[in-house]
Amino acid sequence: MKSKFPIFDRSGLAIKPLAERIHDLRLESLLALDGPAAFEHPDLPVVGSRIRRAREHGAACVLMMGATCCAPESAGTSSISLRRAI
Image 1 (tube, rainbow, N blue to C red):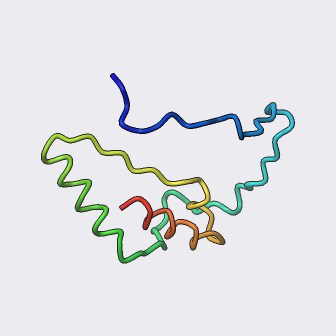
Image 2 (spheres, rainbow, N blue to C red):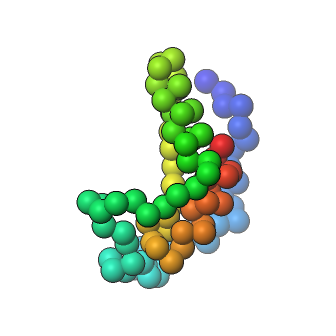
């Protein structure tokens, strides 16, 4: 089945071996999974209702967030991702 999207051109990517990649995300910068969510955004209820509507109609739904959304110091980044997603 042919996709309606163009194939992503990976020729401009510089992919390094795992041993050479820098991993600077530290455990202490992540929010606890069992604690209350401190993130709020005016578009979040819209995203939730669209997911619920998709499920009610049997449609596929994928919600993606980057790992930086979990770090408290980068909460502003997640709002940009949310705006692009909806």
